[in-house]
Amino acid sequence: MTNKLNLNNLTKSEEDYLKALFQLLIEGGSAKVGNNQLADYLKVSPASTNNMIKKLKAKEYVVSEKYGKLELTEEGKSIAVRLIRKHRLWETFLCNYLNFGWDEVHDVAEQLEHIKSQKLINELDRFMDFPTKDPHGEVIPNAAGEYFILPKTTLSSLEEGAICQLISVNDASVTFLKYVSEIGLALSSEIKVLEVREFDGSIKIQFNNTEETVTRKFGDNVFVKVI
Amino acid sequence: MTNKLNLNNLTKSEEDYLKALFQLLIEGGSAKVGNNQLADYLKVSPASTNNMIKKLKAKEYVVSEKYGKLELTEEGKSIAVRLIRKHRLWETFLCNYLNFGWDEVHDVAEQLEHIKSQKLINELDRFMDFPTKDPHGEVIPNAAGEYFILPKTTLSSLEEGAICQLISVNDASVTFLKYVSEIGLALSSEIKVLEVREFDGSIKIQFNNTEETVTRKFGDNVFVKVI
DNA sequence: TTAATTTGTTAGTCATAGCTAACTTTTTTA
DNA sequence: TAAAAAAGTTAGCTATGACTAACAAATTAA
Image 1 (tube, rainbow over the protein chains, first blue to last red):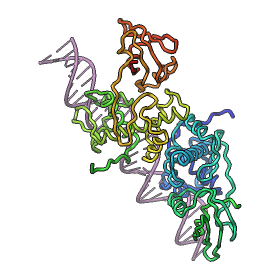
Image 2 (cartoon, rainbow over the protein chains, first blue to last red):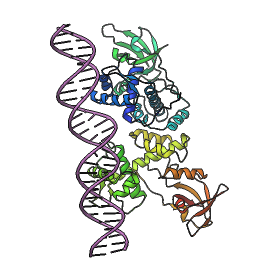
Image 3 (tube, protein in one colour):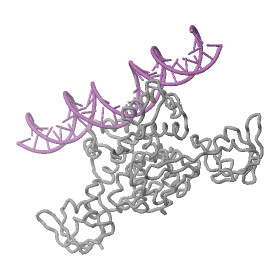
């Protein structure tokens, strides 16, 4: 534990790339993440990612061989985790104190996570009394940068008759979040699986005295706790 | 009231320049603000400001003739006021809720004021119950962009024997803020002017059972309310 | 196993926003 | 009022981080 991390002196873009890599590699659990995949995820051209990856390799946040898969160094991971911590703390603040809806927080948190001030984020954490989960049900890494990913059960993995509680969603897409909100689902909503249709994987569910049929893809993006 | 203001689509730099011009022209009350003065204020080269001024003129936020003084259009002023509103609301939040000291808030607020979200700033305002002054005693422009500058009395303008209350300081310099904090002065501190020395304008003051001698320049940067 | 497709890389361009150095215009002052 | 100083402008360079187009390597499929 000798070398202090250079958490600062990173551009917004560098931070965005490191966070994206972390989300694909560690949270997404992909065995191999390549240049084009990263470009897709960040919605930039492969040339741009290629360029940035070179820079991040020079700074020793990323390792990869030519034409090989991308990997994060410990330092790279550490920066990403701190960004995720900031992102989730801000989301929590926006939802719990500033009347933001579940589906409105992402873009603003995306900006706020780049604010550089250790004191700011630690005081925000204290102000909210050290929350451990964000409004999407994701674990918030602590101040020491400790991070663990909860094993997730998807709605689509359940059998007919199962009763569960919504604990989080894959929040990559704002349109998806909006859709979830609009049909009336919220964090902790109790959902009963009424029917799973074999031929297309669509699921008929019941919640708040409502019945809805959702697609397989929808079910894959909704994480639940069986009760 | 036909044209909606394009408050977004402005870069961080463009915003910084407009705010700087507002502070020099309106808050500073300078009759003439030139290119070099702006460069000095922003700590960039005159070539840089010249370049940016061209851009801001093209966007109709600034007007000036070649070799002439710089002026803001109504739209330019409006953007600057909204930035000042955001800056001061964030400073208030940092001081009142996140244990930031008076002298620590500037740099972080400087970052936070560029976050683009109308909802964020209005909700923050509501959360704090619509404060009208920031921790430095400056007036916070309201949501409608209405802004007025309180006439200010400087500590150095007072006669011997006067008793006053510290209401704000010229916060341009972090080192100055630190110094003010360190000698024990805070917002609302009661100060008695013990002696004004003719030959160098230095002032002997008393506050919190302490006596201090401060320079003329110090006195010019401290705004007070006579009581 | 060769051909097609996908993936990764490189070269060269653009915009933003900074810089220095050189130059011009304006203002000051001797 | 002419020379000096200050202020403003321009040209040309740098870095960051996008982009497209062209090309090379690796993987997949016929």
